[in-house]
Image (cartoon, rainbow, N blue to C red; front, top):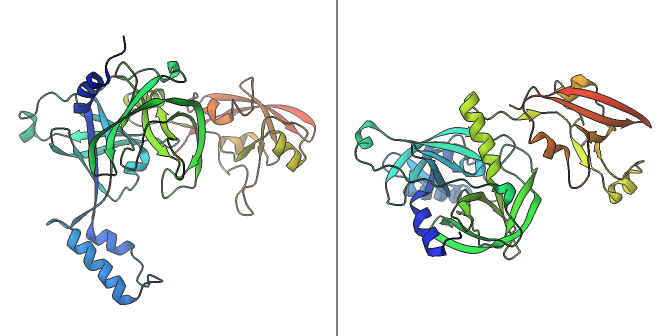
Length: 355
């Protein structure tokens, strides 16, 4: 039976945390170019002086923030990968009752915007804290268009415990985003679209259903639009947690191709013989369509090949290669039906772990 919004909030808030990102002043200064065009040397010095004024006694400067939520009384926290993307930074967890803990990054999902942290509870504080509150994980495969949801997070890094309500506006959405500053823009698929207000700082917070269960991680907004936000389905997180428990890390399969999903427009533009599937492409003059040393390379897949079926499923706008890979494991065999120069080929590819 659905709960009242106030009941969900009271039940959930204690398990929602703020994540404060700090970095050594010396490391920040090292990242500032000596000749920081278009700024003058004196302006650069003012910039450095401002940074020093923000540093604490240990020389740490707050450089960002986000949200997360506790799923295990042992201190396991879920957030977005982009929130804790900087491996040179340190992360502090602030609980709803204002207790502060350092955090260890257990895993970053190499394909999805998901990260798993763990609170560091010292022996001195272990006996002083109560049992950590947790949130229950729902089933994102069962959500329906139009159902009511709540988002909780640390909006703009300023407004702690911000609650907003809305509905599920769309399912299985895809967007292009840069999850990690060190990696190129990538397509993120299978997202939950919601009109619930999600702001910078909300990232990593829970999207809750009417039973108070987490069905998604608030992840992204579309700038310039109103009431269009996206969340990572919680079932993606469940698979990551299973990997972490089983292998000590998140294992994602790697195929090793760069491809373009084919539709009527792409088919016409590239003069392809089909209007569905995925064509292996060169992204630019320097980037191969098949990455050397990967399973696809070893299996003999070439740029220009059109993958019609993957594991017997027709590839189209609704079912992509990425969707199928998301449910595979490293070392699985992937069966590909390929069209090459009007010839149909069946190629078996043994996947490997994505590093």
